[in-house]
Length: 409
Image 1 (cartoon, one colour):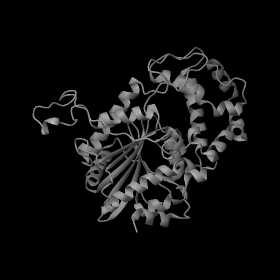
Image 2: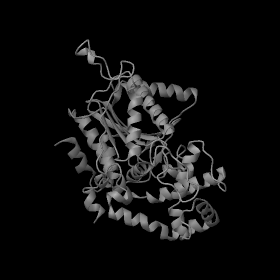
Image 3: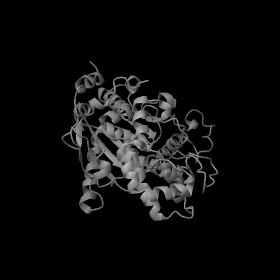
């Protein structure tokens, strides 16, 4: 029986317990020494990695009725700021997985890398820039190995590596965007649409009603709606304004930096409550977790189709769904790196598969931002490095048997 099938059988009916969060030591001499030792150990044991990214800085998804900003590239597009951001993240990947750990070859090889994105412009663009950082210009295919008279395109210095990026239609994407309306997961959509009418949202909204009404009026958004609904739709106010800040553009009159921080906290609170609990996680993140486990099982079996690096380009809600599936939502409210916030732009989860002894595989999960990383212990695992079998058992009840069927019609 194949390992993936054995893992599926072994996880049936298991329930997760409370989570434990650990922080990787950074910034001290002891921390640096520990990192050096860990890197050497990782180089000997790392067999594969699966990285889930939130896209980089983008233009807003729409223009609010009032105080809209002009965006020359259009809406929901990775901007020059986001392109630089994701390119630098790709360079960091190259340093870790090519230069430091030797997991990948210096140049792209189809047997080593698989890239999947949601079928949205911003995620596809982010994946492109990650790859450009991972395999910079000048490292593209060299045709002179076939014929000395041939030159690289567009030149030897600018030789480009066109790495395939795979995506499926939004209507069928249970892995990267299962929470969106286009995916029509009715059970989840019914849950999330009711949130604005719940007493929880009404009470939280009343606590901040004057503020929410004021900032909504400045942008001409959601005026006259119930306060719980205004809170649920806070991102329609916050995201266009946040884009201004990320591009050093002025805020409209009546909106201060302090207002932006308060909106950010309320937006994060809203997202947090849209992705809580194993039932929600099973619908919004379980298929992604299953994809990682399936790929890692192939690696551990020595399957010829297995890759060394699986790169996923998604969204904050992709990551939040995975949080709920893994049972690590508390990291967003109590973890020392998350500080109660949703994963920031261009951050990622790194699932790394290690062969700790011959034929014995284990997973380590890290949350990585631009300037720090946090190791996360998944509930049900007894250490930060969790055996593949135990990891599968810990998350077993978060993996849907038939996602579309469980979503309902």
